[in-house]
Length: 157
Image (cartoon, rainbow, N blue to C red; front, side, top):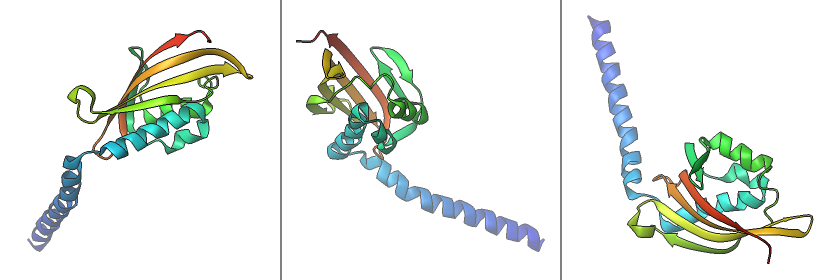
């Protein structure tokens, strides 16, 4: 009988401890990610577009989804970070220019939009330019959980 009673006490203590530990996280989650923190997290992604080494610093949700022109191009943090780090398709991006940030576009909570230009070149030769409109949806702890990019490619000027 004492072992049974001790088991109940331990289970009750474990449940109480779990509730106590979860309560602060719930309170924090309700506050959401600020505009400044959303922009800082999203800027890390933009940095990685031109510097593959920056990929490891991006705060991503483990199951982040990236859509480019309506097609899924990444479905996890590891996948996205490896793509950015290996830099195969991004090696022709020479810089990120004219970034304009919009917080909660169209009233969409947890979203920040970046509108920017990417010059595309190889060996100092300008090949094209791309205008990108990109929505970042973030979690309450400021990890990117979805990226929706729409881009157009224009011939060099």
